Image 1 (cartoon, rainbow, N blue to C red):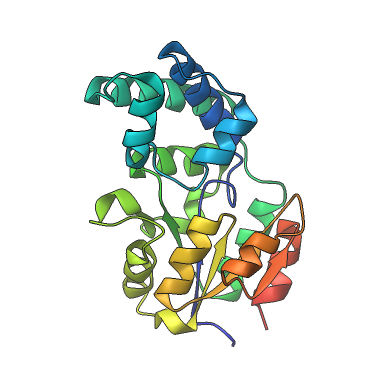
Image 2 (image 1 turned 60 degrees about the horizontal axis):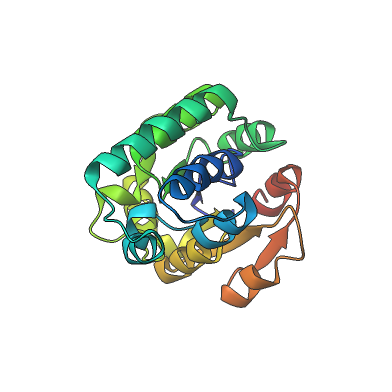
Length: 217
């Protein structure tokens, strides 16, 4: 087998959460005085932790990014996700096939906070495939684009990171997977995925249904 284990990102790879999260974020930033479209919000924030962009948010709004604001954002975001989030098309079937093909040696390594990741995966039916093997970059000193969360996921599976495949959809995530020494596959449902290839992904695919064929063999 080409790989010892498969490590998945969550948002944008397993669950279609980014438009929902960024819709809430756009609205809350507008309330603070920073106005932009949902697409512009996604272009800037996807692949990044909101808190890591404190300086830009404070510069645009002229107001401090307080712990209370962050708590309110997470509450409103989670309520919207709980009501609306769905699995990425064909993700459930792809994960089931890969889980079976690798004897359960798969993990989720997300840059998002763990409660959000677990809630989304539970809501979409993905959690049984990843139970006990879900990792958050928030639990390490450095989140993506640093490799820490991927290295931790590989270690938990007893796998050499260099013999792991990583599935990512953002430049930030691909950077993290490459830094971990893994082989990165880029999911690009729209566009040619050139930015992912330029960052170090070995291959780009456009539907989750194609993924098992790339990994199992």
